[in-house]
Image 1 (cartoon, each protein chain N blue to C red):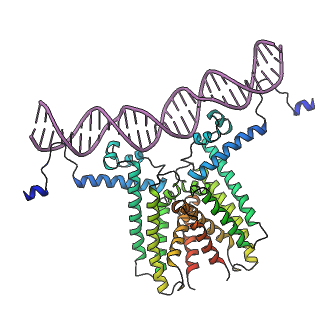
Image 2: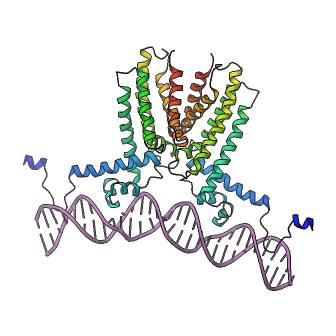
Image 3: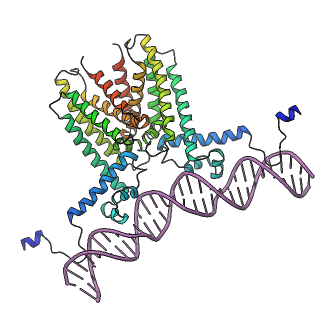
Length: 213
Length: 213
DNA sequence: TTATTAAATAGACCGACCGTCTAATAAAAT
DNA sequence: ATTTTATTAGACGGTCGGTCTATTTAATAA
């Protein structure tokens, strides 16, 4: 009785896919989607492209995602989190002084864009630039993403400030915003110039400006 | 004879449109195209959109432009020149000190994005971000555009250096590159944040960093 | 073992939109 | 009236996102 109420008797018919398998397929779509949007943005990434990469039929797609817009939101959220975690790995690395942690991130980012032949950038930057052509519902998510990443950089800058590496009166929140503003421009420039130089140039300028020397 | 050689006899058939009318129509398409690409980029701007704005039929479009790609190149070139002229107006204004000229440009840009409800940005920045989805032939044009604009800013910074407003050893060419790198990121952020603040924030950071004070 | 049922998959189909191209029309000279 | 050339109208084939239906699969009930 009690157990019957908490574990309802299985009805006839094909059972739903095992949670694990369901998630596996869903994750495969997400991976393919992240790749596509990081390279081509939202508008130029088609559902068929993504399906082709993972050999998944259209019917299955709509089993996992209600629409392209919902899929896009999931991708934005996942990218923000994935990138935040990657950022944290660098910025929380206490074996390095704070500004060198930021440099470590920059180095990783630079080898990433190079590895992808300067065809990929930042998914959030891509969609930010497409803001006039994509669903308005994305905007707040993109904003929150930037805010999260900025807060991580701000934390790093605060530690740099505590260590006297930057001015005691530096507004770390504002500096972190400015870092990301310029950084997104640098990422875009890597595609135009086919070079990672904009990333380093921007980073060196930024740190030279904020450093106590 | 001589006049006949310089004004060839009209052949049979429908005469071409008067040069003036031809150019008028072509310019109308270009204007509509500039508006569209400044807001939505290349991929999301359709020929039909542009035609609708100017009430021009599709067949006429191909009379003026061989393809969407050729049209796009024309728009890129025109935008670069238009923007360069606008920049020069600000940066060559000898009634202001050099850095205030740059500020004047920033103020104009800020009121522009505001006037268009933060839906428009920089056509070149838009296409730069779309680089992985648009014809490769655009890339060098975009690069040349940035280089032109950067050279104008570099000239202004050199004058600031001569006047002792920035360090004597400042690399003005490099600083101008960095300015534009970050500027494009700021322009993108105006669309996400629905605010002109990123433009001013970036500009103030940049000038604070390079100024002798 | 067979029938029933429900989930998952396969992919056809639809309407809208896209860029390009060809046929139709217009405007001239012969 | 015919011929010729320029301009315009809109057809065409392809791609897109989304929907739908048929088929297959995997379970339980009879």
